[in-house]
Amino acid sequence: MANLRDIKKRIGSVHSTRQITRTMEMVATAKIKRAQEAIESARPYALSMMEVLGNVARYAKGVEHPLLLEHEEPKRVVAIAVTSDRGLAGAFNSNILRMTERFIAEQRAAGLDVDLIAIGKKAAAYFRYRGIEPIAAYREISDKPTFADAKAIAAHVIPGYIAEELDEVMIFFNRFKNVAEQLPEQHRLLPIRAELIGEVAEGSDVTAEYIFEPDAASVLEYLLPTYVETLIYRALMESAASEHGARRKAMKSATDNATEMIGTLTRSYNRARQAAITTEIAEIVGGAAALED
Amino acid sequence: MERTLLCEIVTPERIVYTSEVKMVIVTTIDGELGILPLHAPLVSALVPGEVRVRYGNDEVEWFAVSGGYVQVHEDKVIILADQAAAASQIDVDRARNALDLTKQRLEDLPKEDKAEYDSCKADLKWCELQVQIGGKQRS
Image 1 (cartoon, helix red, strand yellow):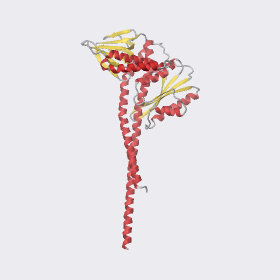
Image 2 (cartoon, chains in turn brown, purple):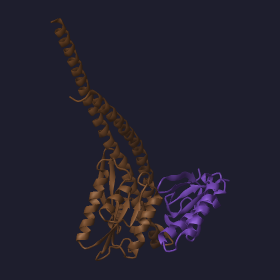
Image 3 (cartoon, one colour):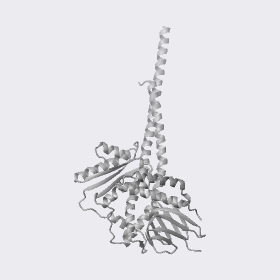
Image 4 (cartoon, one colour):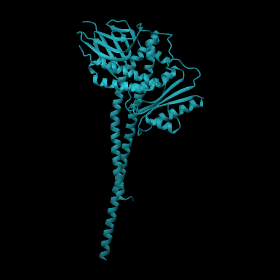
C-alpha cells in the first residue's frame, strides 16, 4: 500500500500539471479564432487575384512565363517544411516531418538533389539532427505569419527557378480542415500548374474583354510571383491555425487524463487513509483487549 | 443619382478600404490614371505611389500603395497591393524613423545578397512613400 504522503504529493503535482494544460488549451482556443480570422481576411485578395489570373490566362493566350514552364530533366528540387516553433501539439509536427523526410528520401533515390527550407524551430532541429542542413531556416513566424514572411520565403525559390537552378518546389504543411482536424498536405508551388489557373477562368462568369496595361505579359510578370507568395502565405496561415487546433486537442486530452488520474489517485488515497484508520482501530481494540485480560 | 464606383483596396492581410466614390486615381507604370464610372474593363500594374479617391462631395482621400495592380470591372475598382495605408492612418514620425533604420540597414548590407538587397530597397521605398503621403490630409 502506497504511503499516504506520497499519494498526496502526486495528487498535488498532477493537479498543477492540469492547471498548465488547461491554460494552454484555453490559450490555443483563443488563438485558433484569431488564426481563422486571418485566413478569412486574406480571402478577398486571393480571390481577386485568381480572377485576374484567370482573365489573363483566358485573354492573353500564348503568353508564356518561366514560372509556368516545366523543366525537362529535373536535377534539383526544394522542399519547404512548415512546422511550429513549439511542441506539445500532438502529431502536428511529426506528420509533416515524416512526410518531408519521405519525399527527400524518394527524390534522392531518384538521383535528384534536394534542398530544404525549414519553417519553425522543429523542422530545423529535426533535419539538422539527421544531417540535412536547411538552405534557409525561419523561426518565430509560425505563430503569426505575415505576408512579408511569405515574400521572404518566396525570394529563396523564385529567382532560382527562373534561372533554372532548381526545377521543382514543394511545400509541406498542415491544412486546417476544422477545429478538431488537421490534414498534412503537400503542394507543388513551382512550376505553377497552368491548368489550375485555367480552371478558375472556366468557373468565373466574367465575359468582358479586358484591357491590359502595359500588356498582358507584364501583368503576368507581376502576378505570378505574387501568386506564389500568396500560396506560401496561405500555407503559413493554415499551418498556424492547425498548430493551435492540434495543441488545443492535445491539451484537452492531457487535461482530461489529468482529471481522471486525480480521481484514481484520490480513490487510492482515501482507501489508504481508510486502511490506516482501520489498522489503528484494530490496534487500539487489540491493545485494550490485552489490558482487560 | 450620380453613378459611383465601388473602390476596394486590398492587401494579402486585410481589406484596407472599401467605399463608394466618384473617381479613383492610381499611379500605373505609364503614369497617373483616373478611373470614372463606366470605365472599360482594365487590368493594370501599379508602381509604388499614391492612390487618390474623390467622393461625391469632391472631398479627396489619399492612400499610399506599395505597388500591385488594379482591376476595373463593372464600376468596381479593386486595388491589390502588398501594402497599403490611408494617409490619415500613417504615423509620419514612425515612418520617418523606419526610413532612417532601413537606410542604415541598406548601407550595412553586402551587395551580393541580391534578394535581401531588393527587399530592403522595397522597404525603403515604402517608408519614403509613407512619409511623403502621410503629410497629406483629407481635403
